[in-house]
Length: 292
Image (cartoon, rainbow, N blue to C red):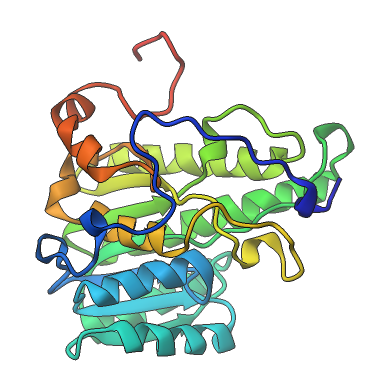
């Protein structure tokens, strides 16, 4: 059962129009979504979703974009792609760091802050997909490795970010739909670790109310997270979560503070319900039928 190519993805249910690729309302070129003057940091941005997020913020005119990851060759390749999309004034940097090593994370972010100043937008994207196995047969050490890759890395990243955050800081946490959807057999380690990460980030937000936090399911993207030889076909284009993150960091999306959203959801329809979403428990993870 460890071959993810055999994983059967369900048909998702949505209360808004469904998007699988970028569209005009979340286009980084929109003046209302400008990231001018903002210093952006994206973890796990050597490839895939993190790279797409960094490119989108470059298109939106961020003051600086710094990408973090373990593999220098991937980071350098990503820098080339980001630079080709960036405005002339945008500074593009990279720092190699193993996010499971707190000292490496502290050192990397300290260097970033020294180079560009306070960090305005932090995208916590780095993570890993665990082997596909039923709970009854899962190797305990392998199961717990998922928590190191998805929880410890996030803990180190957000703890290091907070002292270096700007005056109006934004944390965009790349989560997973499996934190609140029906179980998919074989996905227990990944789902459990991403759910733990989500709850940790929720506590972090509650303890730091000045921080604007949004949790995002980025869609199903065919990236390296599925493995180099995977035959899994993505349902969504990688640019979708990239552009969606730019919108989430804009003033237009401030009503989503503390919420969980899917990149596939339609922005105009979300905006129509902005007051309702902001003032009620909508788009939060909890126990259905109990308002607590």
